[in-house]
Length: 170
Image 1 (tube, rainbow, N blue to C red):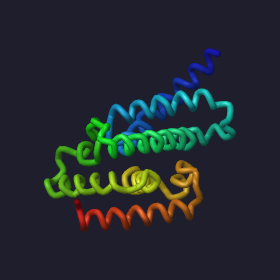
Image 2: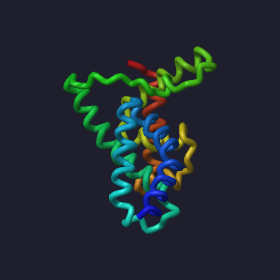
Image 3: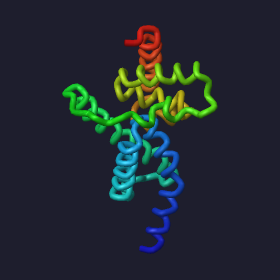
Image 4: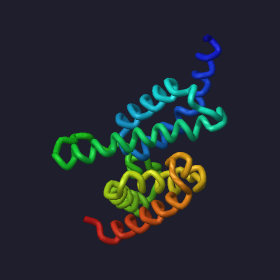
């Protein structure tokens, strides 16, 4: 029992910071990201006996968190459409940018943030994983729980949508 607690603590310490960084970038809100990360770890601890390959824990945990993000994101979209979302995007790419970034880079990040808000969650996930997190396509497929071909289609769709939104901002 003590060994299980120690192992879980070690896994938590190893994965909490990178997972929080990913989910914060996806959610664009610190508080929502913290809730999703907490929920992801709670689900991982409940379902740990289902993990067949212990080496895959990190990818599995990110898959759990990404699925939770998509659920929260859908609810947020409905709340926004109804005028019930009063949250502030305090962790957008712009907000997370380096203080040394040029005004031009900051302006571009604001535009990218606006464009990311307008694309579907599945596209946002693969775009952030690839272009912000630097993940390879195979890992993205594992995290997104889809085929490599689907990742490529989603990434291409996201790139096209972002390019369109950047050329034609609202």
